[in-house]
Length: 339
Image (cartoon, rainbow, N blue to C red; front, side):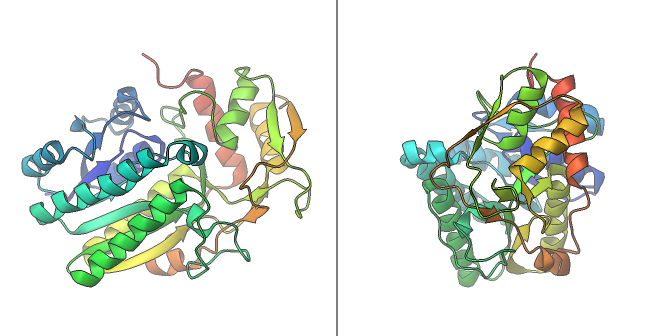
């Protein structure tokens, strides 16, 4: 009998891609998602890719009674926890909503897990916990200096999980700090479908290429980088998904608590991404140079060595493939997941 995983937030961008990789690795799974940042259609597209139906619960992780029912109806071996609010700017405007969903919601999930005797958890954290890094590439033992409520909620949950493990070593916890997920599944059936105007570079560039926006705003061309634009560690979402599978495998074999970066170890500037997307789409990308945005840093990319050592995982896909797959998704789903 296959091991079964609960994926909270499994209808979202990273969640859907991870579900595909989990099926490919032989796991069964159940998705719980309140659909506040995602669409039911995305799960149907995952089902098309994997060729089977997935038990789906439209439920908020803060709903203790509903979440408890999910645990009573299924016997889980582990949980991958994606569910949460994720926009930095929005977190500054509505911090209480972020603390309520991301922190209080996680506490409800942990309590439901404990009640059900499920003590293997992979947590979706973020490189935002490093703030403005003192040096790159960033190792896991770098100073932590969050600069916004979103990042603070991730760091609080990391601390909660560390304390939980210290109090009860029967727990196995994997904390995954993502860098910048981009791209889409090679089938073109699932990809990033932001609500409203995208906050992230790649989906915005894709929407400019397809004509949904007239031009891209590039915030700052006076950073101390090769071309003056900000440098980030862009990682293909399928590589990221494979990192979650590797984390689950480790948790189910070894108890313990670990924190790893999931990144490529290579930084690309905004202009390099724009040029790569022009190659992939064969469309010119218009852009306007504007001033720096508050809170943006010059360079941010991972040292991925610990993930390679602990999880036997490393990113395999390069920038050109990230852009090609993102463009295929955009062309085949110009308005995202619509009925």
